Image (cartoon, rainbow, N blue to C red; front, side, top):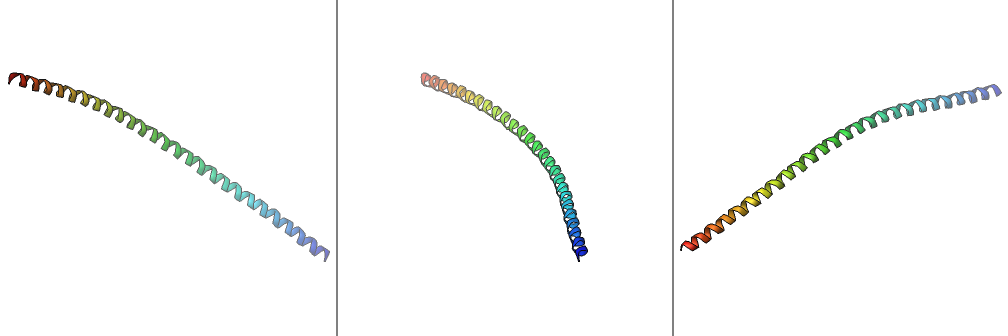
Length: 95
């Protein structure tokens, strides 16, 4: 009977040890997979950030171009209005 208890105890110990080792292996595999996925996600994030920075720069450049065009149009409108005023005065003087 003692031998049976000893065998059961040894078997239970062996099963626990095997389970621990199996769990360690699973955790190591999951950890490795997660590290790889994290590495991939970081690379994807870096690429996305770089693309956004490029797009932001393009938008800034276009905005600056738009501002310059708006200022130029404003100057031209001012010049045309001045010419129209001058022409109106000349027309009034002629009358």
